[in-house]
Length: 404
Image (cartoon, one colour):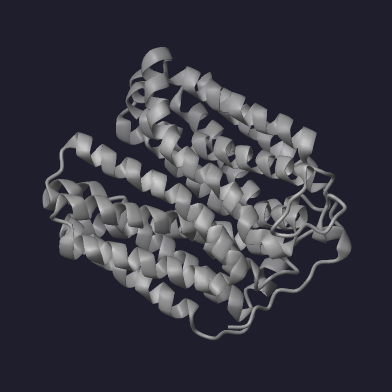
């Protein structure tokens, strides 16, 4: 499959004033990428934090746990909607200034949540976080391309996505511990402090990132006319949706089919998270070599692990091993999918970033809904079979010749 990426102009190839090769980054580049990693870690930590705090939040605000859980839904819904318009609203603002502003918004949102006196104020706070999250991810590929060069987008996004993997592992458990020790509001203050650290790193290490032109809603619809963009979005929806269909309901499978205890399930999920970190690194390396193959390999590994759990998951060793393999694929997925989508729009990375965020959010919501329907009407085993089929379909689609 031919790669349709086009070279950037010298100014955008490296905002640090140098051509950055994949094999060697300057110290300033590493610091800038560290700022991006910490930003992703702080934002995703804040996103996942409520998972470990629902009970004390609900008790303190006088609401049910189900109602408290809607703070997560609010973040996702606002994020999906604002992703389409955030890149339009920022116009030609220096992208460094935008990144700093998004961290400032995250700080304000987390502090507002920490001092919220009722549920509706908490929802407003989480909506602000949703805007910061979606805008960051919509801009991330374009910013990374300008920091490290177009030939190292996969490696660069792997470093940014590493923050996601670490936050996914740490945020729910640390949130629960801090919430038990000091209260859920203090946990929110900690996430505000993390965003403050990200802001300081951005100010210290990100170069100026001027933009020669803004974006428009019309640009989004024009980009949708490209076959490669449509195929890239379809790959995201199928793969991430398939992952959500199975992964959200993997605990019932491990309880009912494998017969694991709560502590054993915690160990399985821990192995999943650790494997995801390694998958992120591997995905970045492979995406820089061939983005389509990176998606194909990710889909194949996810399909294999889900199918193996269906066939062999009643055994404890197999459940541990193939859950970890699933985690490895989960770590590869965001990097591979983003690199695959962006190669069809090297001249419009910010606009394609918006479409990428919308695709991810749509996949997450639809996968969770589909998975819930299946597990309620059939079984957790059926969830994994659907995951395997969708992932295998993505692997096949990724290997099909396509136009940009």
